[in-house]
Image 1 (cartoon, rainbow, N blue to C red):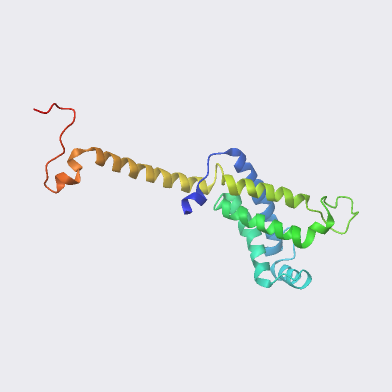
Image 2: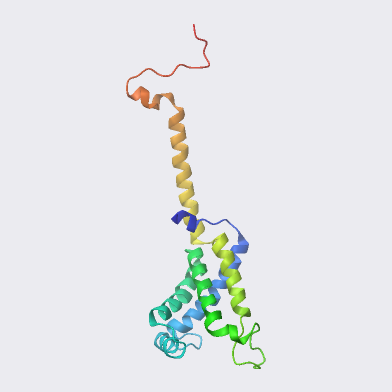
Length: 187
């Protein structure tokens, strides 16, 4: 099962989607986790999530971890499917808890109370593509799954070589006679 989570093709499109989503979510996670890029940092974000939004503290910590570590994972392509599913869940939660009542569009002109869901829909689409297709080329998932499949291929090739060699037939090892050769005539 773990190999199925890691498996990905050498698809450059998936790589571009993964990097875009990873950079955006690492930046958002850095605001919440470290206070970078104008963010409030971990304690203030937890306080805002729990007191203003009513999110339980363990769930708030999970959201911050998904954005920060999921963003990093997406950037390097490690466990891309898992990170993408985490981002997808966070975005669905953000839509339902904070943005759906603001409509579809972002608040470009300051005409509405908050941001709509268009950004979240795009993030969900990117996350779905990565969850389905994997991390793509230039990812740790690709390196790990490629090395595992090459090792499995080598083992399979060795097994098939041994099974075709009559000297390695288990019956010979047990001292019994080999099966008759069907290509030679029987007298």
